[in-house]
Length: 325
Image (cartoon, rainbow, N blue to C red; front, side, top):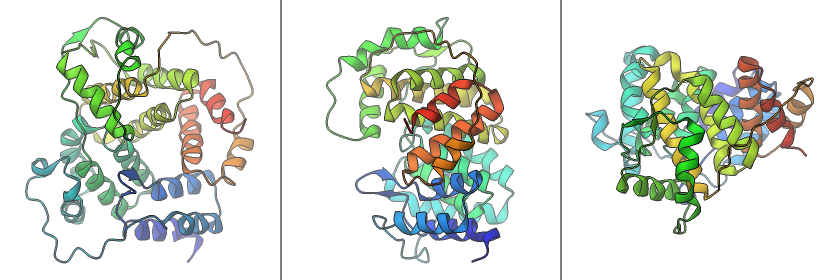
């Protein structure tokens, strides 16, 4: 296995497994491999990570007897349709350009951007960064099958993102959640917001504001669910060039982020953060990430590093450094 194609080979192999395991958990194998490669990991680290990460995964037999879906919208959110979606997107990518496939698929997928606790979105973004067609097909099929929309209204408010969360956070704080994982809690909160006809959408939203917001809430709370809003926001920035309506994408991601926060049950206080100035040298953090085994740590450091390169916001450095404190 040559160093130049190690990642491609491992992503191809990872695509032979179902993206969900152990009762609804997302496999992180392809995402962490892509992050490690981008951070400069050697071939040995990629191979070791792959081999250590597949024990709990279920292998797909083959697609020979699988019939692709006819209409993409027809089975969104049906986990049992994953293989039908996979065959569909494999065909689409064989016959059309990536830009054409994403231009067609993403407007239909964005309302379900919370799919698998943001992992459908994140897996697609990492697949695009890896420039791996087979992994892109997997990610699109995964997002489709785990599509999660909350059916929230589009009425807008003049409130800021922080003000909206201050108003609604008591709903999460006082909610009696049933046992379950992140997607289950998000579904419950989404249903509550929908039943109450809560106004959740700001009149104006932009990527810079949303980036700053997710960075702030994660910095303040250091919560596992909120970690996914940071990596999810990074993921959206990667796929935005393939989306005709940036406003639609940001509105849908915001709704998912809001629901995600409320699903934690955490209180929100709009504390001002004084980051100050510092020497944001990611080199020691990246070196530690390359020796780490936790997929979430590796992905967070990768996303933080990439977002810092775009924004130079020192909070990205602080949340990455905090991982190893």
